[in-house]
Image 1: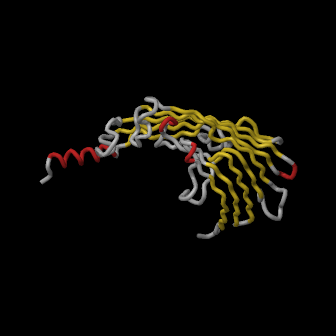
Image 2: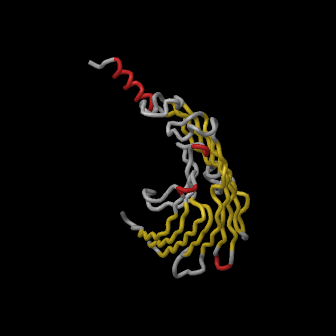
Length: 237
């Protein structure tokens, strides 16, 4: 027979996993007109290159109870909400040989309403928020300069940018959220800083060399990664 205390614990566990109203919208990629292949935010595409703007919005609302099962942080809120907005501009300049100089810049603002279940917002501002540069990189890709190697056989980029190694198990997220930066569970800040990434693509082979630095909330937790990645894409799996 289930005692009253056990019923309360079960009820709280069920409530703790309720998540409501989670959404993510990228205006630059949404295009309701299938006949128009250009992105919604495209400003120019022609002989000199291309230029587009984007806007990525994310929001989430969480409702729970006894979020830490009574172990700590008893002053956590039963519900909280998160929000992020990231306007961006991206462009490419056509160069001789079909190569391109390209780049992107975005500024991300994250905000939390209430204390999230991570506990990171406890002891900081009651309404934590932060804005910072997310993407901020320039690069060069070879285009058709080396026809025997294939299109864009060489690609080099540097600055603030995302980097995903494989499925993201080892390297994926270069930025920290939560605390004074807000939006812990959305995890909108993913770019690494002071990066240098060189790619060589020849047929089904891809070779990458990279230097990446993380953007933690606390400076003494900063990490740097230097490595190589080799991939082979099978045509038939």
